Length: 145
Image (cartoon, rainbow, N blue to C red; front, top):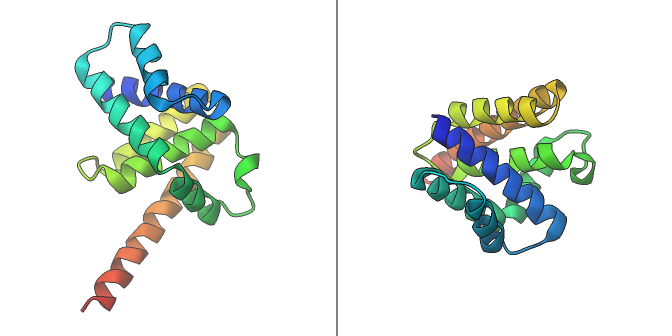
């Protein structure tokens, strides 16, 4: 579990840099990986999560905007927004990771790198994403029968 946490933290660093500099994700990852000795499993998960998140960033931002009542995307702190992006990406596109694990990890990372209030904010947004995603699945299953 420690390796996945490290990978999530590195993904947050990479996403922050991506948003600030607009560098290519591959270049950001190459630089991050060159600065430290990391197990290949950490590098692999960081790369997968970073590339999947940046590849779907518009979709992820749309989801955040839809569930973040009374919050415009540009008002959400960059750290919190990137924690949400990567956690939602995990929930939607990494089926081998239980959603509760993604949520708990996002909350802990928010507490560590942002504020205590950010942990509650991230929890609330991700909980809504889970609930709405379940509703969509039920609607799709019903309409397909």
